[in-house]
Length: 209
Image (cartoon, rainbow, N blue to C red; front, side):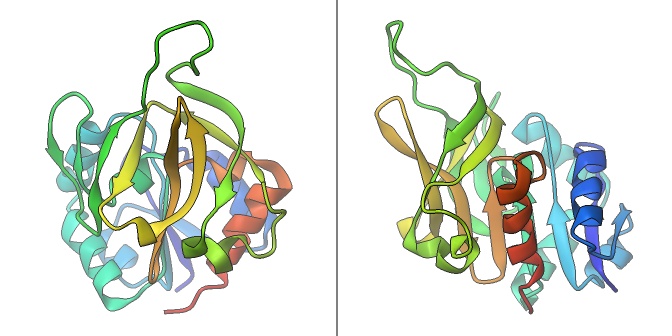
């Protein structure tokens, strides 16, 4: 089976499907746990709040299959909220358990007083800084690629070695990409980030179990 995009009612499925189509990637959109579990690669998109996203995954019976997919080595890509849900906990509108695939906490972006502070939510194009954890993901891109963001919360992995890319935000380097073995996360929207975003999706599609 080809790449499966997880449909749990919280994803930007149209633009992601269009991006995969442009790349010539065979894929399907599914909410069926059996089909998702049998996929060669899995993409977990998402928009919205952490707790609502986890509730939707739970209601769809997808929490256990997604954890098993990660455990057995199937390549998995989380995008935006999908990346955040990979974490152990999320602090958006309460304290919620996540998938626990990548140890860490999803917390609000750092704020600063004054007119010079970057606004929350962080919306727009940002220059990202790839780290050693994302060497293979970003190897075919320029040193400081531009990606498109829409978010107010970000993952803080327990192990800094998991961080694949960061952006500076109000005096802190904020994690915007993670990589742990077969599991990849992009806080930004590669499907909305032009040719460089498509290249990142292509690099994920080249991963094998």
